[in-house]
Image (cartoon, rainbow, N blue to C red):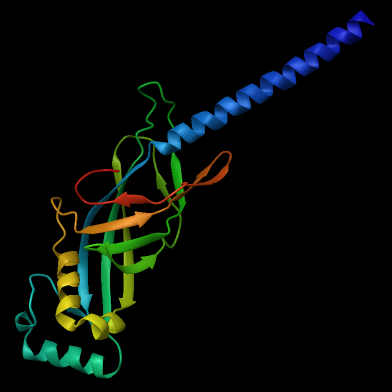
Length: 206
């Protein structure tokens, strides 16, 4: 009888210990993933109807052939913009500083792209991407292609050109362009979604 009680106590103790270790593992995983940082690492290849807007700030900066091409597109009810957003990510969980080495996989990255607090487009990544636990930044290029014809009709073509040129001229000192994202990170305990959006800018990792 005594042996049976001891055996039951041992089993209960094992279960409790397993639960405690499991909870510690979950908390450690959450802590590690919360240390991921993101930054806008530049925007490149900005085109309006296939025309590069780099170095252009006014309608007068376009030549007659380019203007004719844009006018033709507008008359057809479209005004397409394409660009590449370079998203930098850092996973500081390299095994130093009391944190175990942990790799991360960004499974989904729903985001909103804003210029001067005006939303331009929403999007997501096409496939998961890895962020190794090395403390070194990795860059994910996100290609976007969208139509701003309706925005141009509502606010004017110069307004749209101002927005697009700010995208093309993004630098490390600018906070006029921002991405609001809610990453979903794959982990040993399943997919974890950030509780709220994070703001990502070009001046520093967030």
